[in-house]
Figure (tube, rainbow, N blue to C red):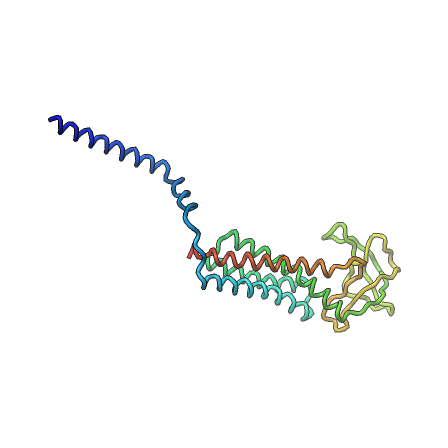
Length: 233
């Protein structure tokens, strides 16, 4: 009799312990899952995925740069060159969405791609004019404040023979410039690149640094997005 009572008490303790353990697991299950995920060793991505990430990052970045530069050299205005680069950035973004690379990384890639597409045409224009551009003095015919940038002024100019220049200049133009004055302009003899005003401050190196930085970030984020997409495949 005493033996049966001891066995019953033992069973009661075991049931109570199992209930307590089950309740603890239920109460702590979210934290336990997070803890297990954090303590799980991070495995390196497979070689094929790293190769894919490198290819996507390089091809996507070079496509944005190449489309923008090609548009500039084809004689398209800066707005259309930006659109050409943005198309390449959109194609890269679409690829990342299809591979389920993650919204945050894909959004960062899209933003960096558009920013790169906006800077590259300016750099391509500066380099082209620096290589084959010719400098002339033009006469200011009108000075207007820019509607897009309150601190910028646009000068309408003409050549010495009276031929008007189709594009208004903002470099070298300011509120202190009056109609009838002469300012310097550099233009492409082949007519493929839009003319620019001349300022004493060099802008080529600044644009080159911006382009290099954006290209490096775009490639890095593109590679990371592809490598991390294995978790969702």
